[in-house]
Image (cartoon, rainbow, N blue to C red; front, side, top):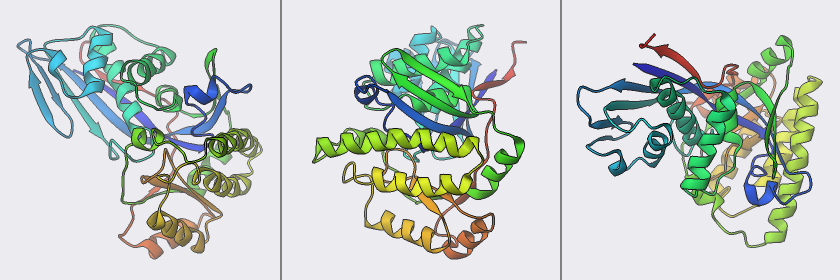
Length: 327
């Protein structure tokens, strides 16, 4: 049996500038400052006695031919790795696997590829995992998403990731232990209670294309600012920047926010947050919230059981094989 463990991601600033139509046409390309979150999706791959394929996720499928699988990501990962029969595949997620704004669909794809490659006897570098995941999701399945999620999941850590027509460059931010400790104390994830397909939000056409482009250029510049705040340990400045990023993002299309999400945002700010931004494409998922170390307790008291609260914790490893029964 092979087991892979792959993190989801949290994007501080720059989300949306990693889509090809923007990053390949802008002079400076796209840029995202993000980290891999220590919440994971595990993928197991085990040999079967027969040649059938069994997959288990939120549903269960058993097929004679992998081409008949309804789960597109599993089907295409099997095709890409050449492992197409006689296997059982299971995915297990620490967080909901769709619509959370944490890039979980791409995390599944990266983890699948890693486990299937190892099952076939290959050790694959993080860059190859990310590139193949992008090929499956964007080029083969035609999803209108960007490329940050795949690279964050494959590489792990805290990174500045740039995107342009020449490809993707991952630059780790090597912060001290003190800054990493403060990150985990001062930043909190708050679940809205709702999820929404990133593809449906990203495929929505804006009412004003020029306004969307202007907002994305602002968001691109904020990714540079976020990196500067992190490198000098100015987390208060980063928290305030989150608020600016949310105000730039929420006007891109009508589906990014709604009255309920706006009300939750206002409650977070009223509790003492210095900034709060909805992660991912919008429409639901998690708010990333910054405040003093005592804020998390105040949020728990204010929100009660209405909204799940998760401390920020960094995964430094990226997609990893944690068990290889063939060795």
